[in-house]
Image 1 (cartoon, rainbow, N blue to C red):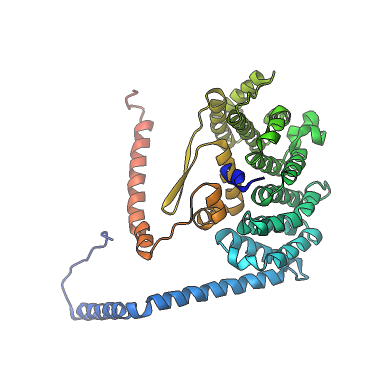
Image 2: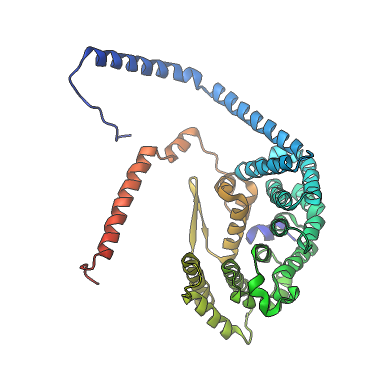
Length: 428
């Protein structure tokens, strides 16, 4: 499957107080001015380009030493030590771009992760699956990432399809299988087999749950459906037509699930399939399409008191967007800002891809959008921006400016709410 196909789818507030002078105050001011001038004169010598480069190099070496230590601890006899090492690696790989450091150590790390997946228990296996996903993300879509994926794909499938394995481990493997396949799979066979494996997890007919399925759905089904939807965005048109003809009918029954997250994911997957059908100029029609729209309208207006208020609000908002798209083709665009850049989520495929990476990277998503070449290729952001120190400082807002902005926003919000709450306000 061509790589291009995969990438395409996818200050002024300080004040001086004047008071009657005294000898103590004058002496204090002299000391302060002396310290200030001394620090200014010492600054350029201490903070020159050479010292900054040496400091950065020292920090990088310290980080690499800690990472090597964590990688060594993956082979420790203590499960607690291995879990702590996996947790540290997860935080490091999600918050930094370490592709050069990992390049020559990828085989060692993947072998250690394989042992954690084979011999570890629930939480250790779950962390190993997450670190494997991050390793593949760091390696990218080249031969190195493909090598990591191909070596551990059979083990991921084995754990995912093992009903006796830990639910947390199976959930992590479902995410890892989808993400690693999206990033590094080069053969259509790998893509098709991963789609089939994931569909077997969330499909009611495959699990044999029938009408009792809604009560038994959980995080595992959500992760499998998320990964399945992500892989749809890179499907070639030949296989996608087969899915549009058959597999999409597995999704409407999930709209009745008692799990609000699964209902929302099923609705978004349906909207994604309608979008992909439009791109292929295919008509996604079925005898139950009218009933499907009725289901979506019910979910977009549901007000059952036995559901949590936040769940009801979130569900109504998302299903209104889904229904609007299916009926009129309108998509609610979203803007994502990071650093000095921004990108637009203007399709269900693009949104599904962003949400998948955000779930794995957490708060590190913005750093990777700025610096990770793989993500910048997927979202068509171009090469990473190279900014000088002056531009970086100019882009930062001081703490005092942030305080002023937040204070003004708070006052404006309070006034607006007061007008709305006042019963004597004019009704326009």
